[in-house]
Length: 107
Image 1: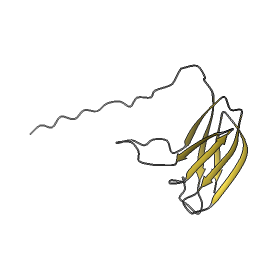
Image 2: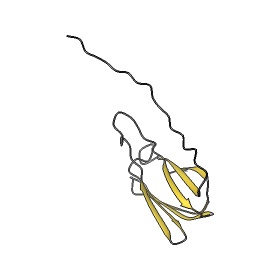
Image 3: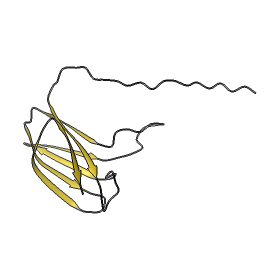
Image 4: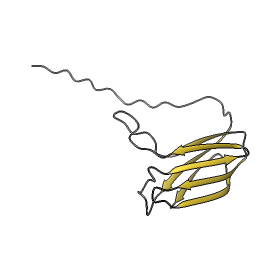
């Protein structure tokens, strides 16, 4: 019996559209919780707008998506509030975060 095996190369996509707003990307570093903060909940507030993200893993078939949380902020110039609820139950509140950057938050 002959079995055919197909091997494809990985592909990387890059978004080359012009910038259309500000953003914030958050990476978590757990201590009491797990190392990457999996199952943590993040909520940000910019003006009267609220956004919620859950940190998840294993969300893709045969691959791994990024575990960082990415927020599109439209025209916001600052994140008024970031609330983190860690899997351990600990809660953190950060205020007046700058935009257009990647932030690492430790538990």
